[in-house]
Image (cartoon, rainbow, N blue to C red; front, top):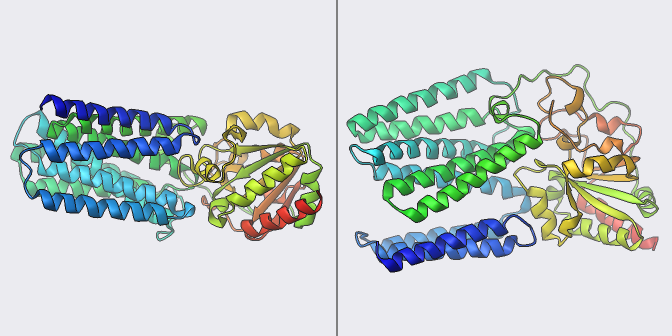
Length: 450
């Protein structure tokens, strides 16, 4: 590796590190994305120019151009509701690509071959698990969260068989065993992800993202490419740290998330007492004369594409002298940071976004909470209903506020598939309808009281 190539790889690695750093805040996320794209561009060009054994360079450039075009078009057209499944799909493709590259670069013996086998296992597990996550998030695979002990045991058996097959493949160098290894590892990822749902899905997506990064880093060792090692390590480390942080925020171990808990169907269930509807006019009066308001966004906000209307409501309330904050649960939505990205798109001040640990003590002094499509993360059953898929998960304590207004299309259940007693609480009122239309009506009512 000549000096110029080393310098360019160092430039690319520096851009990757800075890009990840800027992704830590919605205010600088666009700059971070730009730096990451620049780093990847430098890496691709450097690899094409300085790797002498490449043949069919024109074909490689064509494939890169086609892949880039597909990525750009997909990213521009995807709706915010579909962002989690796109992340899951792209992550799975990354893991699958790493596994295939490792399979094509294996040597008959040595450390490189051991790392290649590890890459094939990790990358294929990520591919299989991410594919199931994509199908579930897209609602093409409707499987409610269950214990599914048999599936999890089968997944562990498949993983053990994959490891044994990897050892056998290392000894024989057989391509057929390499293919079998990747198939078994992919099935392992699928079986372990299939029973997972509810608020656990963002944790799993983050974990699979970490596995993809680790597989890419191992591929870097196989190919003797330091930049791939750096990039893969960044992705693997960030995914692992985020997984740990979300698990800690939910007061659950990662093993509990993956292995799951037995779900006991509640008898009677329901939403508690009788549901009490409310009109936009009455909601506007409550908000207009409140001192402190907390808005709790959820996946329903993304479905309705109502973030701009939320911004209008916030600005109007500020004009009336109302203190408005947003309560953000660490696993709200269908992927890590989903709500932060959604609200940043509407240019809502990042200082108004308060995480769960910070906002929960404020609910007792809050006059009105506006819950927009956030079901599972506000469900009080998580505190008391043993056997619920939500049991033990810390929630936003919206039921401690003076008044709770829930914007919801219907009385349908959330992603976890369980009833929410909050809706029958005497202090809760339900504003039924599409969130975009309901918030639009609320904006008009607030403007009329100005």
